[in-house]
Image (cartoon, rainbow, N blue to C red; front, top):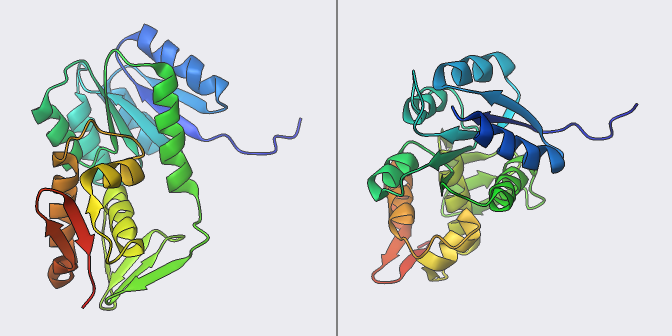
Length: 229
């Protein structure tokens, strides 16, 4: 049999076998290959042995090594998209997740269909070689196909979400962007009007951009605007 398209591999990490099976069934139906891990230690072993994991769905509360620690260790080596699953809708947890470079944050119980939709949205963005190619503004060069940012001839290291955010700002330069609009376009869903997600990412993005961070203007009470002199 000839397989026309290679399936993307998703690592599902949860100590509850029922939860893993539920997520696996829905992802398999959507034509993903699913690898399972029942704790953080096993997840790290699988991730570093596989090298071809396209996305990780990671439970926070687990024995041996919890989800936060797994995320920390993976982020030292990889920008693979991570979706965190949590039983607690605690905003401190949520902020910690975004600061660690988590791409999505889903509270249990959740709809498996919504989870699959989030997976598809993230993978569509991370695996596309954008036709726009290279975008340039104010000494900032964004190569969307290579997922690379160069500022004043020096490459800067951005997380996946920071890259998406900067690309969105640059493509909409001079336009006042509300937080809601940024959430809908960069995170691909309405985050119930929670602005801290964006503010945390903008703060980190600005600091990595050095002086060029000043090109991202804050519009008080509304959002942000990228403006070249």
